Length: 386
Image (cartoon, rainbow, N blue to C red; front, side, top):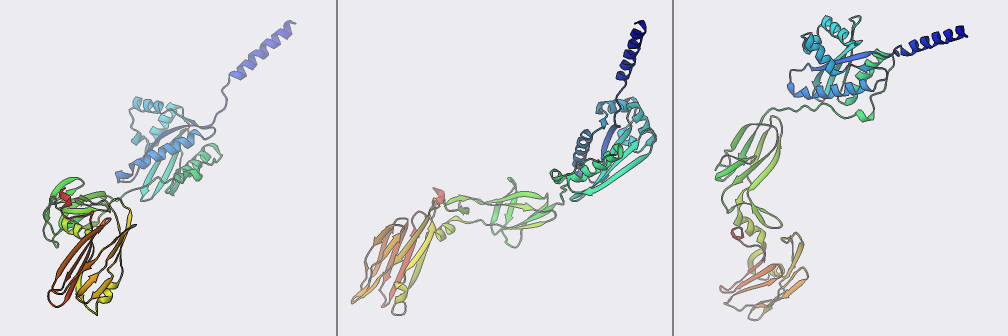
């Protein structure tokens, strides 16, 4: 019984000893940094993307243990080493790796190439000092994932699958920042020019001599011209008034040419107000012209379509011309009579809905002069002052 007890005691001690032994693990990796080998600092942001993707892939690679970043920083401080120098000094990198207990040191370099990036992932074996590199080129996250696959295969002997449809997002989007210029042509004299909301100068008053803005950064910009209350543009259909303004995209190195659209507001309102304005001599040759039906379409100030139809219905009487005009505006219909006599000058005005009809028959000079006008009555000159 004493021998059996002694055997059980030895067995328990051996078993306990075996249980306490550390379980074999995969390589321990210290990730150092990612360097931009391009002299253009605009691509520095790509380094953060590459580092994030590499660390993400290494953390999900079976059997690989990553050294805590705080431990790396602490060792560098204690050894009075700089990370930038460590990447190019094999002896120093081996010494740091040994202090960290790391099996491998990993770093990456890259060069951004317009819409692509050339990624080089480097690995140093701490024990032997031997190094290797894996190079990939492309424009998406999968470029980095494939470099990480090669690295993990080198470290563990088994190649994972990190690249896939979810890694098709682009990682490089460099912009050409070459400044451009803007030439503003205007017939206005001393019109105030506002560029991106800031006053920059006055129009030259000569349509052939532009005001020029130099060294303008590429991107979205706006130009506005202001010249008093009676000048600008009319915003339709509601008939509002504003300074002429244009928003535009300036390409790198581009010379953008702008033509000021500022106009006299009364002139714009007159053109919008007039639907028909005809004056001609009424005789046998033009009678058909007076007989023709005239149709007009426009949007009212609320944006609703309106159709106006005019029929003059002329009648030649013994002592003069008689018109029986019919004006239909939408669903509204107005019928009128305008009679003239030899030697008379007759004027008539009537309204139907949003349209005003004006007729003049002048028979004072042995000929019949006929004037027909249709005007919108919801538009009038000078209304920008109201």
